[in-house]
Amino acid sequence: MNGLKKVYHVTIFPLIFLLTCQCNNEKHKTISIKLNGLKRTAKIYLPHQPNQRKKPLIINLHGVSDNAWLQNYRCQMNHTAQKKGFILVYPKGSGFIMRNWNDWPNEIKFISVLIDSLVLNYFVDASRIYLVGFSQGGMLAYKFASIYPEKIRALAIVGSCIDSSYIINECKLSETIPLIAFNSKLDMSCRYNAFEYKGKKYNSVKSGIEMWVKACGFDIQPHFIINGKKFDKELWKDKFHNEIVLYTTHEGGHSWPGGKGLFFIPHFEPTQAINANDTIYNFFAKLKN
Image (cartoon, rainbow, N blue to C red; front, side, top):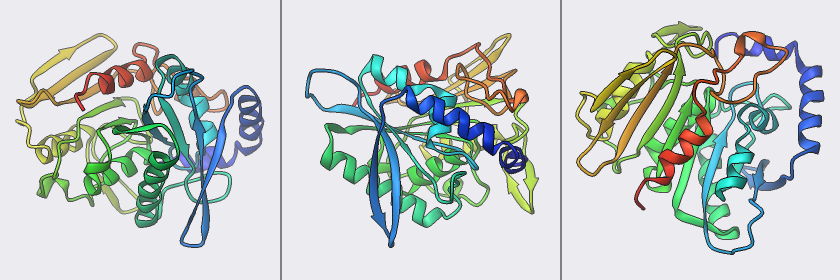
């Protein structure tokens, strides 16, 4: 996204130090998948729970010029996974060290194959698979859900928007995909209002959400709107009680609400007015299978 590559490229050495420190304190397992002759990997976090019942799965996609470790540091979702008992996976994008999701067809295939592999090899409840994405990872999550709606139960998107090349506003999803999204009015990377970057147009956050509302067959008018001091909440609901929720924060910039800021990028300090991890989990947990 706009400005991210320059920022991250000049901070690679403190970033590596940061990630090394973080990984020494976390118990991850790396899983590998061979796809189109390339080795693709993901970090998997398994909650330390004695029972062998099938568990929900959350796949958490990092942003552009990020990687799985940095996404773990930013959002701190491992703690929620341990507390609530779900399997958490951080796939790695393409590229070296600073990853991205630029090759859409292959990235979508990678996520699809990854889901199949996780269901086959781990205690994953196939009816409770959720996709979470930050920044460019959120764009990939939108795209994946529009192509494979049968593979996931719901979406959570943070600091992202729908690419203007998507056609979901012209079609109807074969299955309703509930969505919860978090965006900041101060985000200068994935801007809240419509913008153009390198000749490519991006929708405003609100118009993108409305595209998803239409694709899911919801009434375009929100069920209710709450305007708060630090964040606003808009909710759309269908007759089956599926929901689409948009949280708009008045602070925080391009960051993960309730997560950790990056000390070498001070203007990305996250808002603490809402905890995205808890809110996302609660949104997923109340959905009927």
